[in-house]
Length: 197
Image: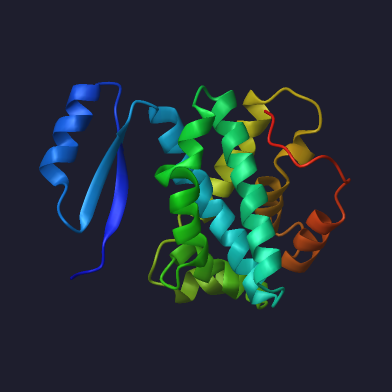
């Protein structure tokens, strides 16, 4: 049997999504449906930024537990952003949220993870971009998401609510190193473990 995967087809038109799922699904390619277009879109964008951070964590040699904690907290940021933009929290608990994030953060072929590993090992963004033939979507996405969050989330201390997204954006802009960014995450104020928007 070939390797298998599962994806989400999102559409406001539930009948269209179901028809597409029936046409595209096979024994090794399973299509599920969602009416939460915003949630699926947010998951697809934010997971690449989280993967950059996870790769940096690996490149710095911080270990699996540190990376798992970072990815989990990143999923909280993903969920929070989706809710503010009109998406559904439960969508991010499925394939298009944590499912896609886990594959992108821990998969050896992930372009964003591999870009982050190289950053964590000390290469500059310019060096990586000059020597890579692959596109790491998370690079541009991190900067765009930081701007989007500043415009849409008017709540108190967004720097703490989206520490990973803002941290990755700062690292890519060169205002802090991967080591400094991850140290900042580990010295954040202690609080209850929850993902309220």
